[in-house]
Image (tube, rainbow, N blue to C red):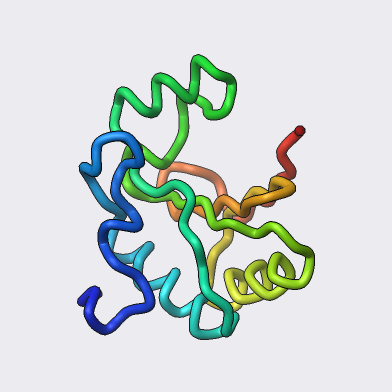
Length: 125
């Protein structure tokens, strides 16, 4: 998707530590659809992750070795209150997402073609 016709900028999906990488076009398009449906801003807290960032998060226990982030198939969206979380989750489903995980302050979605669908999970604090 052309970032100038989107609610997102490519920099929002780059690695938080080095600014490299991005997400798949299909994921970007689905996020754009969900954003339009939800009618609320999506703040991306994690998109693509470089090898170093992913290794750091695995070591800290915040990610797994099978994460879809380093392949550009996943994002985490800030969702700090119940109303916004509900709007985002509903919109993600309507936009066609079949894999999501919810934490108290974010929602993870991915479109990894190598992972089972449908799946929905909760993160432990």
